[in-house]
Image 1 (tube, rainbow, N blue to C red):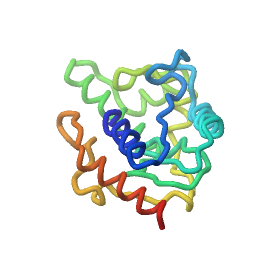
Image 2 (image 1 turned 90 degrees about the vertical axis):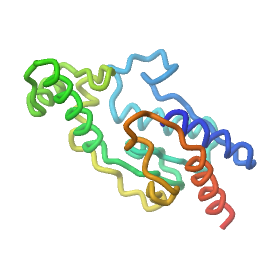
Image 3 (image 1 turned 180 degrees about the vertical axis):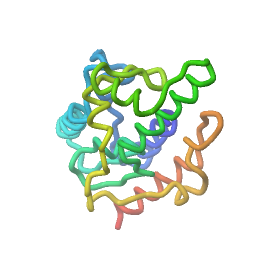
Length: 182
């Protein structure tokens, strides 16, 4: 999804729409430890980045909609935080089962809320786990929902192997530019 997102930013720039892709604390090039982050710290960081960059709109992708700054824009295939956490826990339980290690979702969740938890190769702290557990998508009528089907294909996260789809990136940029011109 990172390549897809970077491509969308690049294509928006080519169309004359200023765009940026800031790293949240603990992610990618950030020096902050991921384990020290929470959903609230990410919301604050996203809002601060939007303010510093003078953003007028936001594109939130998947679970990123849980931390999107309070700006108008688009929510592409928005996923509640609790659903994202459920998927990560399910993957951990299945991987553990394949290794012969008995783990269950409820036990992992309880442990994660006190000690943090490694999920999909990332160490999430107890605050993030606890906040994601019940995180619903915020009621944000200023964010236009964009379904994966609107981009002409299944979501990239549904593929067996990570991939990029230039046509979907172009379709999302076209949708955004059309809305901005309206």
